[in-house]
Amino acid sequence: MERVFEVGAVPFNPDGWGPPESTTVTPLSTTTTLPPHVPFATFSRFERLGRIADFTRNFPSSNANASNRPSSGKAGSADSPFDFSLDLDAFPLANDDGSSFRLVDAKPPPRPKFGPKWRFNQHRPQLPQRRDEEVEARKREAEKERARRDRLYNLNRSNQNQQRREAAIFKSSVDIQPEWNMLEQIPFSTFSKLSFSVADPEDLLFCGALEYYNRAFDRITPKNERRLERFKNRNFFKVTTTDDPVIRRLANEDKATVFATDTILATLMCAPRSVYSWDIVVQRVGNKLFFDKRDGSQLDLLPVHETSQEPLPEAKDDINSAYSLSVEAAYINQNFSQQVLVGDGNKVTFDEPNPFANEGDEVASVAYRYRRWKLDNDMYLVARCEVQSVVEINNKNSFVTLNALNEFDPKYSGVDWRQKLETQRGAVLATELKNNANKLAKWTSQAILASADLMKLGYVTRVHPRDHFNHVILGVVGYKPRDFASQINLNTSNMWAIVKSIVDLCMKLNEGKYVLVKDPAKPQVRIYEVPADAFENDYVEEPLPEDEQVQPPTEDAEGVEANVTTNNNKEIEAQT
Image (cartoon, rainbow, N blue to C red; front, side, top):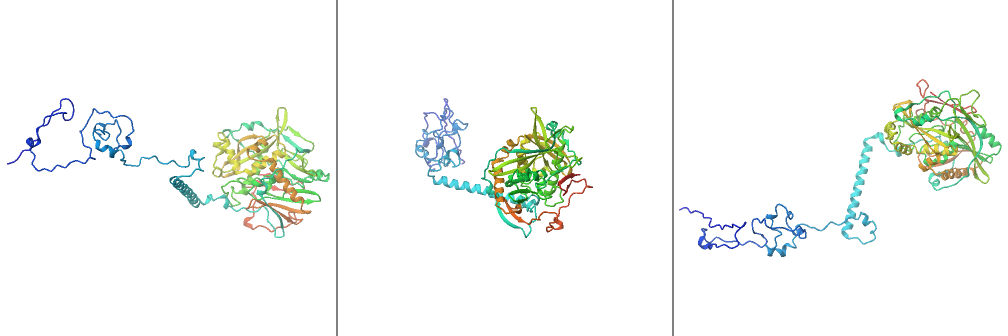
């Protein structure tokens, strides 16, 4: 006979949910239909059994016991009517063990030792845990630095055209002959702490004539650029010290003991900033000292990207090589200094005309200022300083020096002047100060030596990066020389201290001829004793190999030809 399962009596609670508080239920033994001898397993006290749901409970909002809850639900959530984990009254036996039960470590993590609060507590003893964290942090930083070096190394290996500048090999500006005797070797580090002040100079003579500066060039922007013109009919002179007839006359009159030009003095003053090799000829005649430059010396050219980290092409025939850019920069500066003038024929004349020009020659606008400084009680220095123009300010003529920075390819500098010059002129100047620190410092030194009131810097770029014959002017900015010197961290006391130390060293030498050569690979300068006929027309040096000789640009290729004449006036003409 098949048995039927009976549920039994289910009490009804009309006042709420769950079973009634007091019900009369028939004992199980009399009403149940379950089979006998069914085992009854009691529940453990850790198994919280109770009512199914209670919507009348109201949990407090305090989180005092939230850390003791084994579940992730929060008080007041939608699961709270079904969550009895906080109902300690319903489970008194579980209260004692639940208070100390934690699923995870809820302690706050220790604070690192790299915050501002720990900066001044380094002398306090550290816990072992914090020491371990510091060691781990150092390991992580070391791993990041190692990964960065590996990334840069792989980048340099993948791109052979972007080798580091330190790997470039520079050649000496003059061939060191075997019969030359090296006397001194002076590292540039000895110049860094020197300081020497000189009094205001004394003007001995003014020569030449100056044209007025055209203020319209101050309003040039990249949007209304001006084409750079060529002044091939004007003569430019780069005469050395001993070939200057005025300096010879002043030497015969015993006006000073040391004689030089502003270009040579600026090279010495800014020697610690130089990277390329240069040389200066020193002649000791009696009690006098003459600083000269060789014919066709590097001092007549203007280096480009000398202090940059990006290497230039090594091929001499490349338009972006160091030599080609220096010739191009000299050509740009000469033409720029004549184009920004008014050109109406109105000139400011001085005591004597240009001492290097012949009668009837068309001479560039330049004035020579022969000045004398007192270096010691019985030692004076005379230098020939140059200014290129004059401008009228408050009904008074002010001297102006004119120089031009040239851009050849934005890929090398990383800054496109046509896009950044008008909106980010400071960024353009900062880039030039990084790539041409020595050239800008020499220009500033020459302006200070000449006591110029203004120095005008022009921004000239190529019409096309591959066209090194045609250029445009993008802008002209004016600075006061001493203010600009402070901006580029050029200390005048240190400049004169370098000159004074070299003069004192050369005055201890015997009579004869010497050459001061900047080492092409190291920041130091050497003094060599050379024969008396060195660097003269009849002095024959060992020629360079044919593949290393520099071929000048040809005139039929519309290039720039630097025609250095060796007449008495040492006239240099820039021809196109």
